[in-house]
Amino acid sequence: MTEDDWPQVWPFFDEIVRAGETYAYPLDLTSEQARALWTMRPPGQTVVLEEGGRVLGSATMGPNRPGRGSHVGTASFMVSGEARGRGVGRRLGEHVVQWHREQGFRAIQFNAVVETNTAAVRLWQSLGFRIIGTVPAAFDSTAHGLVGLHVMHLPLV
Ligand SMILES: CC(C)(COP(=O)(O)OP(=O)(O)OC[C@H]1O[C@@H](n2cnc3c(N)ncnc32)[C@H](O)[C@@H]1OP(=O)(O)O)[C@@H](O)C(=O)NCCC(=O)NCCS
Image 1 (cartoon, rainbow, N blue to C red):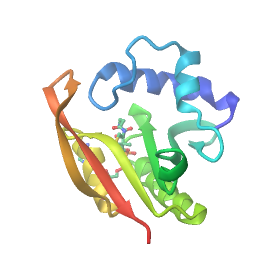
Image 2 (tube, rainbow, N blue to C red):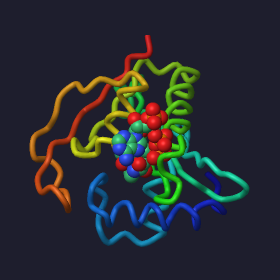
Image 3 (cartoon, rainbow, N blue to C red):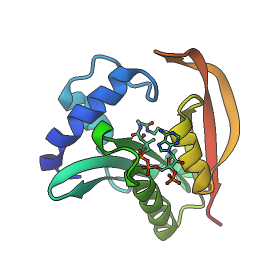
Image 4 (spheres, rainbow, N blue to C red):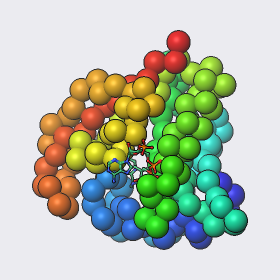
């Protein structure tokens, strides 16, 4: 993701956070604050998937913890509402797994997958991730109230 891509990412970032179903970011972020949160610095990175100059989705990736936790990676994904169900999320997920393998990570851990986000849970399971456990009532969903957050894990070695 370059600085020029952000104006196309921000509208779906904002829409996804405001929808209140998938991410526990602050609810009053400005575009600049959101850009700072979504832009991973090396050794991590943030990518976009675009088609004909139109950004359809974005993913962040990098070490889940610094120092002695840095051999386990993590990632976040957002696909624009109009582009969903066309394989964009799957392609970004495949890229993230491949990137972690190439960088020598030993595993990928998703820290907070909302249990009612069935599209995401099924997608990550189909890429080989397993639900390690669920933190009860850790997410306040607009539609479902208090729901659990799955920790999902994919070993790479
Ligand atoms: C989750 C998300 C990234 C999926 O992206 P997408 O581009 O719509 O997903 P894809 O088109 O690649 O679909 C991949 C798989 O997801 C699942 N899926 C997608 N939409 C679904 C839906 N509405 N219901 C159930 N499963 C669904 C299917 O298992 C699908 O498998 P298939 O390829 O065999 O059909 C996207 O919906 C999104 O950005 N949601 C809001 C933010 C979010 O939840 N991010 C992830 C947080 S963990």
